[in-house]
Image 1 (cartoon, rainbow, N blue to C red):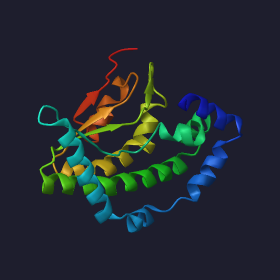
Image 2: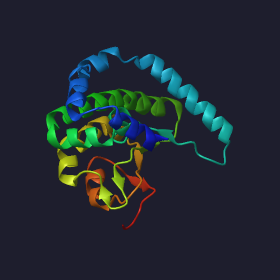
Image 3: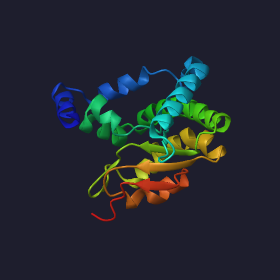
Length: 196
């Protein structure tokens, strides 16, 4: 399970300092864009969407997934504690990591926006990353506004420019970050836990 993977990584000695070294070795956003194969990803996306909608028929809308900037994915990569400590103690490294993810997502979201317009694909996207638990965000909304949400907004810009509506899923009590999510372009929510 994901939880056991998190603890295995923590037990293996992954530290926030090692997380920072990992981040420092990542490609720059410019390199991410230079290496992104827009034509190939466009063909894959259109084929996948048409096949899925065909399987659903006319009675159900197959909603596209749009990448954002992962949060919970870092728990599987680094372990829960090392990642959270990195966000709090090494904010510049956390920003660099989120800039890397944001450029990957932005490139794909450019593909999605273009493909929707050119292939009559419904302009709605679902996106998901667990950022909250039952008592609220895993780190403070203030810190998220500094190190996380600006990068998600950048990732979403191609979709918003194209008029695509974004539905956000997150487990947990997200009320403390709803305003931030609306400000970065989220149009609706799925899995909304109203209170803790």
